[in-house]
Image 1 (cartoon, rainbow, N blue to C red):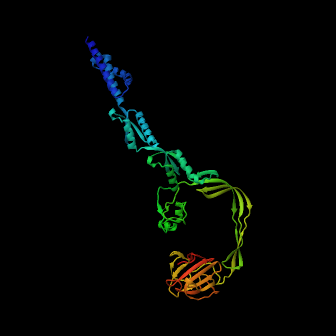
Image 2 (image 1 turned 90 degrees about the vertical axis):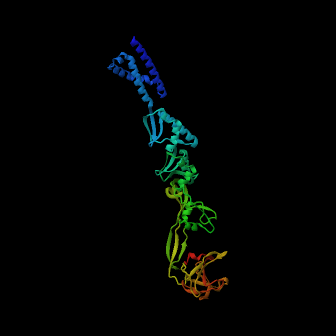
Image 3 (image 1 turned 120 degrees about the horizontal axis):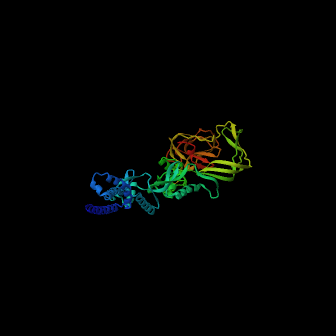
Length: 497
């Protein structure tokens, strides 16, 4: 009777214990169905231990005791299983603790959706994510919104984009492959003619497009990417043209060449800058060179050759064309190879000569030159200091240069020739004009004394006058002019002071 009552008590205890186990496991979010499986796996082991027990009272209660112990052990195993979780980290920074990895995947999907809505970009998950199995209570689990927050803050999250890679170097990042291809197409466009026939349009460098994960800030729009690739830099240095400045003055100011200014500003003319005009001082160093191979059928000239013959009728140093050269013509079919529009090679497939070129013949003098015959070059006409240049002065054209020296300083003929004028000439004062009989004349003005007369033949370096201050003059000096066919040109092309 006592055993029966005790058995009933044990059954009630087992029933209550089982319910408590189920309630606790339910609170741990554990699948209750796992209890049966765990119980099945471990029951036989526990029954065996009960049979071997020295406590007769435990044996008396037999199967009921075994059930209690099985439930207790099952509870421990199930409880341990219910504590299992995953710690997800990147570079030792914990991003999330989740019961199931699927929860992390769902959080990532939330972030992807947010990034796409805000930036129209696809979020790129880092590759160095670590998963470690741990035990964690429910209170330690990371909520989905916190996972998203951690991804943003701790990962400094990346987005998917594409890089334009030149010779292995990522030079520009853009949104997607379509934009990258558009960038490369627009770089090629200026060197492709609408009616041209091209065998190939490529780059001299190795150019690829690849998917990358980057910060949003590093992504360029199409125009910016094109500009960076063509200039090789984001640097900007601009000069505003001031009054009196030209390309040579600006180049000297910044210690660059005029050619550099023209390279940085291909659409300007170096000799026609406007006040207030802005010019770039950054010389482009493009990452990409466009290589085109165009099929052509054209008629081109064949340059003529030049033959030189000796002539006793000409003075030494003189040359004269006796037979004019004529270019020939030929029809050509083939390929022109260009880099950025500049021809670097031709591949001729077929040619047909339409007309042969005619050789130009140049006679070269061998007759000794008399001292009074012009040499074609000019020597300094006097010694002194340059005080006024050729060009605009006080609102009018100064047609020569002024060389200041004491009165009576010797003036020599800059080259041999015949004196065509010697005398007084208005504001020039005492003036000598030497005709060099080769299209050039030289003027010597404000002289004190004239030492030659009209018709005199003079040799290069011969004294013809002395410096004075006659005519319109503010002090003793030589006003020296060079005229070509009667038109004044800058004497500084020929003499140096």
